[in-house]
Length: 271
Image (tube, rainbow, N blue to C red; front, side, top):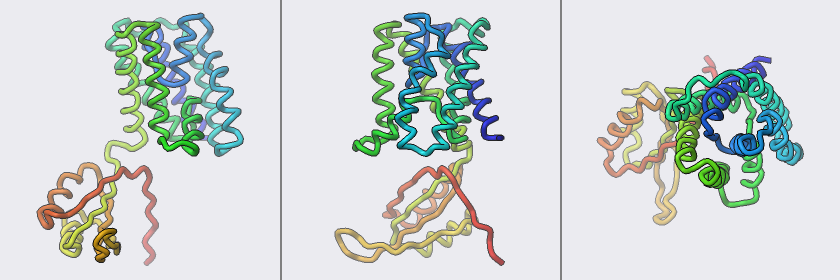
């Protein structure tokens, strides 16, 4: 129940971003929402109806291919957004400054989409298509979505002019930065893999400085066939610079890879 409430709140934020900032100033979002806005501006078809009609084919296709819980939550999110954009549509826009609209429209949409995605749903059929195509093509989900949105914004530049299209891209970029912030948090975790000839010194120093344990994995060089030690640890984003300096001070030839950790589950210590 709480998850559905958060999806509803996310839909409200997206609706405010669209109806109070972007649409009155003829700016777009990406994906199906962006296509819906273009058709709304060209043919004056209510945005709420377009969102449902354009997303419907993708949802039907996805019913047999993607997790049912995700699809049902997406249907709920799309219907919620359709209702809320209809409610906010008669309310006058909060600003007619195109620059402010692109910024604050992006912020509201980012907060809303981030909240919806974090609660296992989405608002856009292009994301569903990308998930399905990802299984058949060599492109990632993000690359497919980016390609679709490039075409949408390119078309928008013809219909609305290059300035509107560029401000729309600004709103889109801000929205997706906010989505990252909502999903990952301000102090999200990072995982480090370190290939080093001094595993014991580094692991001891890391524990001393960060009070976090290090896992030592055994590997083998693909070319040399020599056994190597690989350290694995998780730290916060704010500790990254200090950790890199510490590692390279001990072993200037260390090889480090850094990855975002989207979820961290800690098992309780058994005493």
